Length: 77
Image (cartoon, rainbow, N blue to C red; front, top):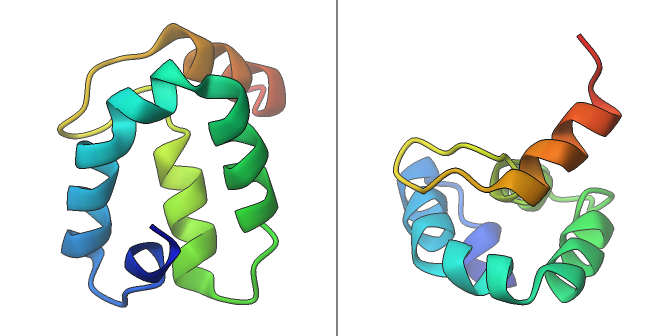
């Protein structure tokens, strides 16, 4: 998945998020472990993919409560 996350076209990254979101939710611990590591990547597209993947609400994906709780914990408004 990382080569797709690194792609420079935002549309491809969005499609990959849409296609993998259910799997991320199903295996949440592994997903968070992997995506957290990707947030420190030297590739800005990989970092962006990781952050966008963990959003609780996506443009074309369903809302997910655990992602929302994580987001609220780390980003207090």
